[in-house]
Image (cartoon, rainbow, N blue to C red; front, top):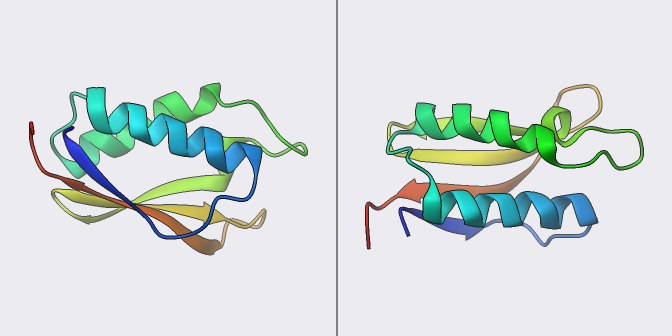
Length: 95
């Protein structure tokens, strides 16, 4: 696994579970070794997660970079405000 995932909040919706599955897959198979590359890849792949209650996953989840080797995944409100920190991912290399 290239990225270590820390779940910061209990998953409550089907969409949150799908985002978690996407992150687990990315953590194992992503070519990204830096936060910026991970963010770009996430933003591309999240568009494939189906809408729930008329809200697209790509609008409700946002990657923020903590540093060059660490990112946080935040759930946003419909107004675009930060709501909950869902996950933290740290690059650990091939392990």
